Image 1: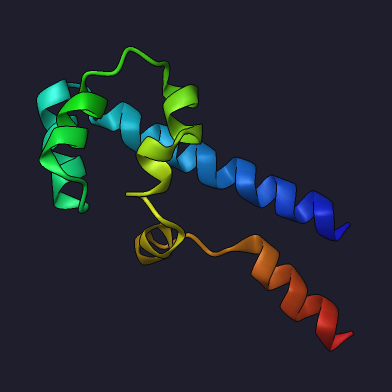
Image 2: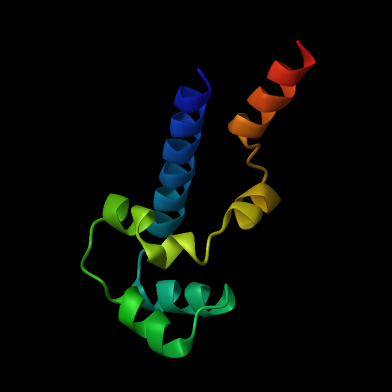
Amino acid sequence: MKSRIQELNRWLKRRIRMYIWKQWKKPKTRIGNLIALGMSVYWAHKNGYTGKGYWRVAGSGILNHTLTDKYLESLGYDDIAKKYEVLHLNY
């Protein structure tokens, strides 16, 4: 069960990253947001104009290095794998 929860957690995080990328519709917005999240200007321009699809970008390093787990937690995402471990250890 633990591995299934972790797999679901990874999928949910990727899905959230995909929706965030989808909200940044224009390359100019993507570049500005990537720079604001700490990416260098060169890489922000290179990644902002990518032709990859939303799901592929969400699984690549473009968003994994900028929209980190800590950032997702600050947006309000509760890590279900951590919740499962806490509940599992209490029983």
